[in-house]
Length: 376
Image 1 (cartoon, rainbow, N blue to C red):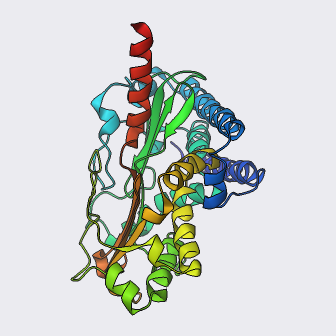
Image 2: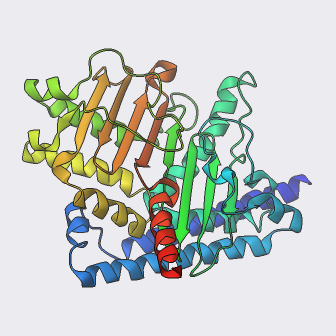
């Protein structure tokens, strides 16, 4: 490829990302953003449930259309790389470390294909989530410059797209976008998004401390809101919330296929005052709304319906910036983990997990059971 063609490809990629960002923002700002309480309230009446299903069907159609457009633009060799059977174990083979991966990397897409890949990515994320995702990709160049070839292979184009099954408006299929510090896993059942998890985002460096992008903190809200909450606790609340000892060196659940978390440590929602409760709900909302509105509100309705009073917040490690620290939010249906201990507490890992429905397993089981029962 000549220098001129590389420059043209780069320009088209930038234009494509900009257009996708604009489209995601327009999509997300069209309806009003519901609070966690409003999302829970909408789960009650049958009419609201019907409206939610219609919205989810529209979201699933967006995903299928974007996937089809991308597939249509690929060569046979590229389609062979990106495509997997829905039942393949590869669908569960998720991780957030720099490693070799299956799928089709951005690096092997031309300038006309890359915007279509970003269009697919945007159908699963909210505007803020999309910006976080592509900015996380860009941190690979910063790491490459910092490490001068002494670390793992760093490349902002080594993010892999995978499609599991046949995308369609009423079908069951899935897709993933994954690379270093990013793993987004979507499952669509009967044309509706059944799950947007596991959903992992991380940053290294957590804060860029030199160079042209000095001061960049991609996951600043996740860090600052968690710290503000723990600092707002009084002495008795801190005794419940703060786990003795050092912060764990990694998220406790790591890249486990299924989460089974039973540690009861933490301060409960019932032990918080009104302002603290709202702060914790806002933090949960921040993580949920990395995904597009319809998927996020499906998760919020589920967790609120399971009992908001049962949600617990736990913290470990130092309370000041620059000190290794960790927190988690646990409810009956979900887990959020945040860890910032590596590289002198400048290396963040975060994840949203569903205890029963990561990879859509709970929804798929119900659909299977229903279909099996009808077959009888």
